[in-house]
Length: 335
Ligand code: NDP
Image 1 (cartoon, rainbow, N blue to C red):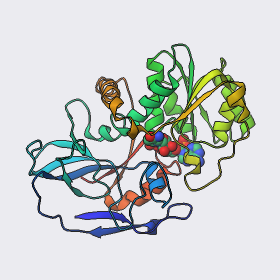
Image 2: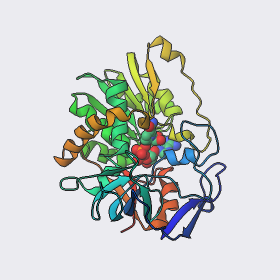
Image 3: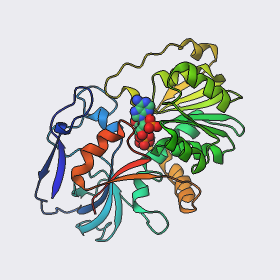
């Protein structure tokens, strides 16, 4: 089967020659192992960090090995009594058409129910991105009904969940996203109260003015996905005792500086600002997935997917994701 490995580490933006498509032979299964045929690969911004060989919260992606990543698919062969051929599963199979998984290790492969929830949603709204939105909002921002929640990268897999979960808790939800189409979708389909196009309001002054109009009572909670000047501007409008969940800083993932002009506001406005990594809070996943699964199955949590076709399309789609070419959850469809 085919797979994509990390061929070299990027210096700055990711390029196609950082990846290599190659063919490998699946080994015979040992006891406890299963062979999974992948239907979809998940492409996620965190993969950019893992391509660097620098100290971070996650181990670097090893060179010449399959790009690590979330996958959903179907068991096609099993030597594990907990899995049988035909089971739909979510795992970390990486950028490959198939994966041999040692399913005897707890948690590496989860069976999922596709009766009411499409398989691909387990990589998005009912998967890691959804739980990320849920965790940062409910455990760090802790919004109360009537408060105003702002989220950046609002049309994305994480941001879209954040605003809808905030609305379900009686909050005013304001998104920040790139371009009129994304902003329209955030308001009209996801049900946010407002969305600001940061490409039109492209400096601190314009964004500040737009935030003042969209959040007339100030901002109580900010869910940060982007960093840089957008975060700096939101700080200006935070209410006293506001909470900021620092989830991502995608504007700096290629090594761009993320200057901060207004840090004194953290003190002046007595803000709580906390970063988090969703995989360090596995104890909360069942609660989060229960809420997200129910909302998706009943059509109350909406999401959008951008699906590229075939394994070979993954590098291009990944480079696009880091520049905002995706609209909602970025997936690669293999079959
Ligand atoms: P998205 O689906 O939101 O895709 C990324 C989006 O980021 C793009 O579509 C683009 O949207 C926006 N973006 C890219 N570059 C910039 C830029 N320079 N300035 C402003 N916006 C930019 O991805 P996810 O929902 O998967 O992830 C969202 C964030 O959450 C990321 O920062 C990611 O790293 C983080 N994350 C953190 C986790 C954790 O445990 N802490 C776990 C999972 C995700 P637009 O067109 O609107 O600019």
